[in-house]
Length: 116
Image (cartoon, rainbow, N blue to C red; front, side, top):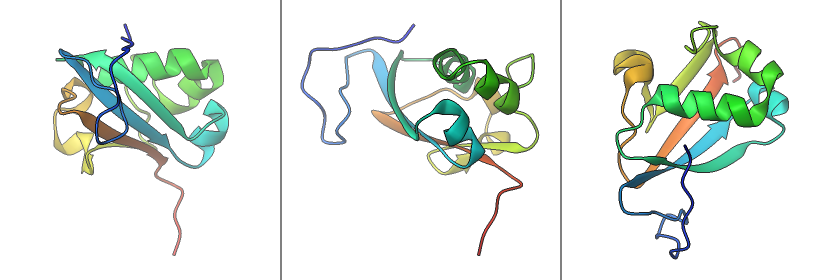
């Protein structure tokens, strides 16, 4: 469940409610096109995981996004990289990685997209 707040925004520009984690999600490449937007600002109860975030994002972005980005089990497809605060979740606890701090940036980038 995503929580809402009437409190003023923090220095990061995201509203933080006691007991919640504010998350900035940035989508790139084809994932952005499928979602219809680049940035999402969401709040989750403390202790929520990347899996919780991906489930909520899929619900908001629709079936095409969910099918392209995630397996039926809710894990990122092998061609999708997910980073929390600049760290690949495969180097952390995968989708069990707990979202912490007042702001978390999560990047979903199709691995086959590159550039110079």
